[in-house]
Length: 165
Image (cartoon, rainbow, N blue to C red; front, side, top):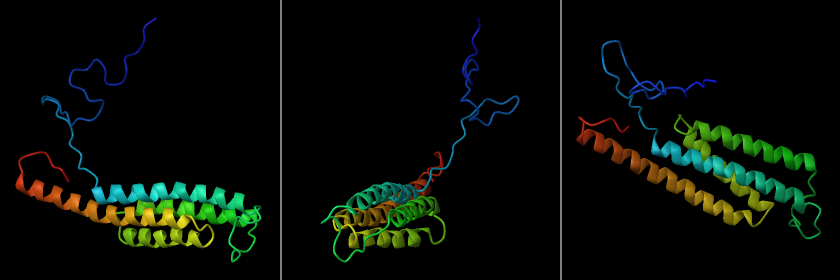
């Protein structure tokens, strides 16, 4: 019984469809522009934060039945309300992670940081997590921008090399 070789196997110089080969000319690899470091860093932070919100939702759901679990200022929340708030925040953060790099994306991400920090009113220890993520958000904005600037300077100084945008 003959088995079929994997896609791209058996053809010399093939990268599995990632070439710009034309008849009569040798194949050359396609160079794709790199994604912005700022976009990668900020979207990663928002995705990580989305999962933290899921875990905070579990904590809030579990603490609602514990006598001294929630602060006195927090009303007894129904499970449906807890899951709706958690799911809404989760979806919002996922959508915002894809909006980074678009107009208003970073501002919306910054507003999301405030909303995640608001969980501190219900779960006091979320304040520590919120401060860590706010610090990571600010660092990703600053360092991502710096990496993008340095890439652009390198590309301007070395125009004959592969694009590193």
